[in-house]
Length: 93
Length: 470
Image (cartoon, each protein chain N blue to C red):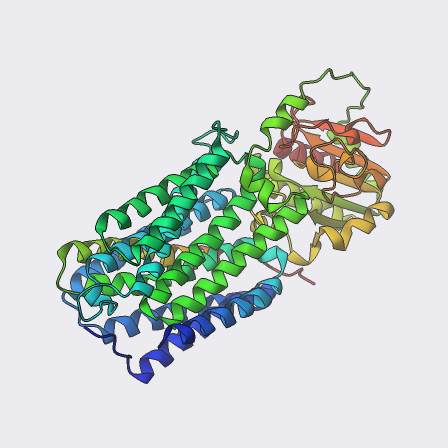
């Protein structure tokens, strides 16, 4: 992919993000932050590439530490979001 | 090594992962669809991780799985154990981890560019990639050190009072200019010292940016760091040409930016003035002026119980004080008893109540308050005029009429609840001495229809429940 293609994806995604986030109900803003936290840990993709590659041992170890940190976030972020969302109940009628 | 395009199915897999992340946020438009949304998020993450692992030569899989297991275990246990009142700290801590992960990934890419497919034929890193990783490591480092300070302030391990260094604006702007200048120079000279200096300066500025910001502005800071963690992920996505990372980065970046905007608007503060910091420090000084003693009425739990039983409608305005006193369960019990006696009970939540966006809603949800009894500022504010009782518990600045009338007040212009229009106001507060974050006196205390319920919020709710059941 060339730079312009990537930039296009990025700009479009910013617009999608803008509209999707405005449609989030204010009552769920805390879960929103928790889940965005979890998904921004998709940076683990870069960590995996570094951790998987041979060549530079330092880079590999940096990658492994990054994998562990991102995993804290992924598991923690999704789990705490799920825990919060499960608490939102409608009135019993 | 030339950058070769990955097979089409790999690009599609990352695209699907990105789309799933969009659906995860889309689900949050209503509590009913939110849990399915969260599962989309998990699926998207799984797709991204598995795709990466199967398309790269993995030197040692056990080490990678070990790292995932250690990190995942810590994260999972923390998520299970954390108290809902501590969510702001947890989110700040999680932001710092994303920031650090971005720093480590960018550093690894710098040390081993071939593995990331960003090295040119001469072994040097492509100039465009250098800018991207420079920005990535800088934003990551700012996110990390900024979030650590935010975490310490929110967890009470560091004073929430702003720390104001002399010449801080000049120092900050200078550091920022140095970072950008060095990243620019990095495109022509790939010396390691430039890369590491950028990293060090970015850690420094993240720290400098957050220490002058006071406790009242923490919701904005947490949202802002949320945004930064997204931009860091996006910058690394540019380096790796990865659609999932770019889409996610853009989503998270806009999410944090919008939340910051909402928070600023709810406080009638400009984003720039929040970032410039110092709020709360000035206010503390102005409240030290000669205070006249004004008459106020003290009520008891019995008074409150009696008045609310007689009422047709009660609107509860909870604030962070309720969370500190852990009063949400007792409060819900009080509301339940009232509802059984035929009183209409609603909750009114201000956008900046609590320490992060939506914090009060989570606490009420935890106490099993149905979400359709909880209303936002603009939806309920007109109802105070018809309400018999406004029951304020642990909130202060968000009900202060000075925001509407007193142009000299630090909170002037902030949208507030019109509790002064309710027939009777009960104000649960620990003592008459303490004031809200903004440090300003509140006219509601001295109104004819106001009764101050001076006690611990939880104890007061429990006492009211006892009186109601007599």
